[in-house]
Image (cartoon, rainbow, N blue to C red; front, top):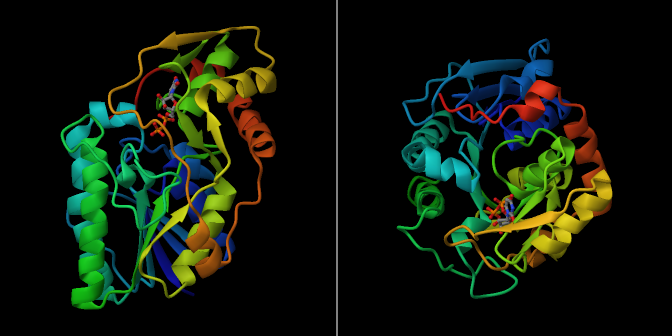
Length: 322
Ligand code: UDP
């Protein structure tokens, strides 16, 4: 049985990856420091004899006994609110943490896939964004701690590949949504759905003309799984190119939830990218991958999850920062 280490296992994407790898017949070692992750996302896995969990911060030396065949490095805060509240941890997990995991991959002869992000393109001057574009990032802005750590992550991952011959993969993840997103992480989808469920107005930042392209989590996981098993080492965008303005998105959430609340406008956060859409030509040709779940279907599944949360969870505005 192949053994895979998933970092950030208790997070939104990490937990879905644990599910998928177990389903594919791997032994899964989940690791998380639980700063932004939540054990609730993986509590259904603890009864599985092929799942084990380490409560550990990968920014510190990572020790895992026994063989490891694959590493999926998905530990990182991933929302602008988190970057503001825990900027140093955000920097450390994708720099020091990635370094530790690359060292582990080298020692164990494992294949490692690191989670990069469309944020490496910053506020892009090229549209849609393809992997050849180098980006437009403000290193000292509020998002700099995330964007630059992820850019460093890509650089050190490539260096381990070219210098040490480690089998590395880099996925650039665009906005993704689905069940288990943290309700209070500040991201637009949980923000809007949470507001609708609590009977609050929906807060659109800026004039709402900025765009995003939302990918359903199952599609993303499929793309990542294909990349992991490929022999491709350059970065690959995975995302859904179906682009929408944030105003239109608010209207869709109003329709979906049937809320009678209205849209209110708030200041646009500093360095908020004006437009974002993945060019997925490379994913199509290298992995034979395209997203399958359209937004109306994905939003229904996601809404069903948020509706199943308890009242306490719905009104809990606390962040889980340890
Ligand atoms: N946004 C918004 N209202 C909110 C939260 C976010 O209008 O309550 C906007 C935000 O300014 C950005 C877009 O929605 O333009 C997506 O934000 P998110 O934080 O989800 O992701 P990112 O900016 O990292 O793509």
